[in-house]
Length: 342
Picture 1 (cartoon, rainbow, N blue to C red):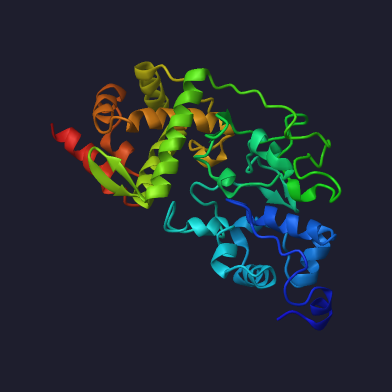
Picture 2: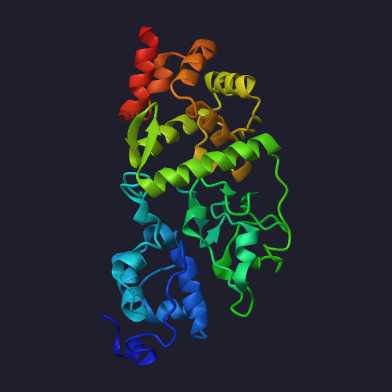
């Protein structure tokens, strides 16, 4: 329940009940609502959620039902529409569960420490931000498999093109554009960040993303003539991407084998002491685009290209099939088993 003092601020419907824009991220919507009412973001949040620490965690992942209920009530939209701005709305679609205590599959981490975002976990398309004079941030830009804007055919950026800092739009002064960097005041829309991806990799990354967008839209993927439900398809794709993100020698051989077959660029997997596994979601946008291109090439003629890779990469079945002790979707495990029987 809202307290009496808060009710007197804007009782009932808010004077400017902005609805979320298409694919808008929860925090982007919150920032626009605060600005529309002439309030600083933290003032706005403390008025309506006085007992909640809103910005010391990843709000797009962790906002609770009270936050969503208040937003729905005061903007006059259905609860489901407000809930849809959260990353959790992809549960049972892209992943089983949006984790609260650990990192989630397919969600880019923002690395909050003492309210400071240290990771490049929010991407953007500079052309999309500059459209219609109304910059806002998309929910899909937090997904690890989204590396391109299929509308503008651009590789997404994950940092300020001027100072290289992570994108932290909620810290921008309320009189500045959401498309500005709070650290250097540079415009995210004024310069397209350079990319290490070659043209072939960008083409494959763009095509692969169109395929994934289609899978999300229709609810299944077609693999070797069989329909595979969306969540199973993304589980399998995630397994392949995480294999390709390993630093061990077998993964290096696997990346080289695919690159030799198709001519795609190799990712630069960063070193990390005492860890052989780099999470796919931890990689910057260019390297994720390269890995997705390799995986996309493999899946575009599945399982025939998989059979070829099993032959040339010399990786044991256990390497392909083991995934954090979880059961893999049958469309991958069955293919590996059948190929080995031939």
